Image (cartoon, rainbow, N blue to C red; front, side, top):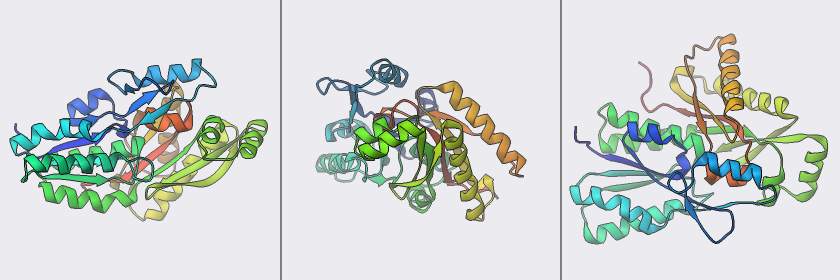
Length: 302
């Protein structure tokens, strides 16, 4: 079946390759480097698992990520412009990366040759697995028969509802990236304190601290429960997932625990996505980020 429009996302969406293929979504990869010399395309030239393994094995080495170029986007946009198929391109929050500007520049270049090309570039104001949920909502809207413009409008409506509640394994990478100071990082390492962080409207905000892994992850769960209560909406109005880094077993156990807690509080929830946080954010968090992504569904329950 020919599609009425196509969905493209930059690699910050952190969706599994198999799921992207199943949902007919195109991903424009970010690049990652461990030496500032050679930059590798994520999920093309280096897998996410290999990326984290290198972080774990090479302590004291801080990888960097680099956004897709305008040419990377041009290469993805052109086939659809030639066929007259509209495109929705979803990018990581502009507060974290210039990816949305690369995509916008690429759209302008493509329109020089194909003036009628319909390409909508969206600053998702989110990132990582939450961006993945947002991209999946775009696919759900498309696959339900919503038009190109209806989908664009609904995506703009729901993106402000997106939240990430997460913690990290230690403060080393946040300190190296300038997110926290050296004194705070040292105190955190001595006392076993971990920050709990919220992402909303494209920016990150401190949401408390926890001593040890268990307490900090429980606080992330408390933030999720608080968000659900304050929303005034049923849980079936939201898509929720757990995002993890190097340790898939920890991620799965945390997801199962969260489902158990939610059900014990009367929430009727059947499943929760489990997705690996990719290199784009992993370079800032280190190998052990863990938390939740939540966003309002594009198609609300009847």
